[in-house]
Length: 175
Image (cartoon, rainbow, N blue to C red; front, side):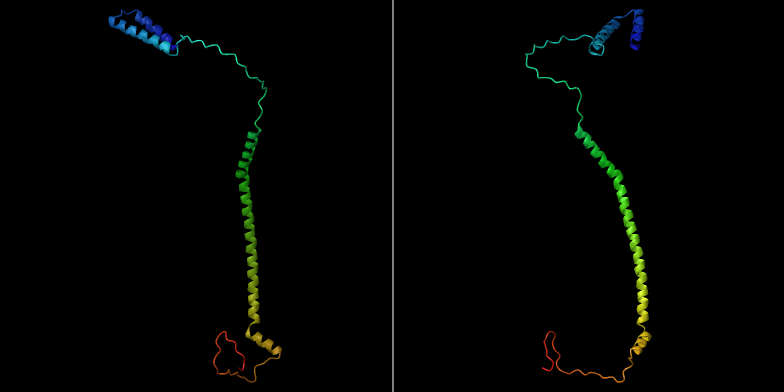
């Protein structure tokens, strides 16, 4: 609307003026430009006559059927559900399973540590028993109970001084 009121004001102002020759030439150019912009711009109302189309030949039309309702695409629905389940399992279930597995491993490590301490305690008690049973006093005491004592005489065995047998040779005693 601002354009219409502005043009009315400009027309009233120009009506009071006495135009010069240059102003008349300029006005003629403005009128020509305005006609062009109105014709080619948004305000164009003239339409070019359209050539009439040739009449079409009568061809057999395909039989049309009325579609009352579009069938749902079950394949796409199924794919979307499977994809949503996959995303859900990856984002929710997988971390829970990883956490559960880590907890199981931690409890197994705890059980193995307890078993290791128990075995270390058993080893130390067995080492103490071995030390007590292998002491010289104990061995002497056991030997005395069995009737063993120090040797009365010592005999040394002399080996024959012959050629030693080479490794792998079969030798028979006395031959």
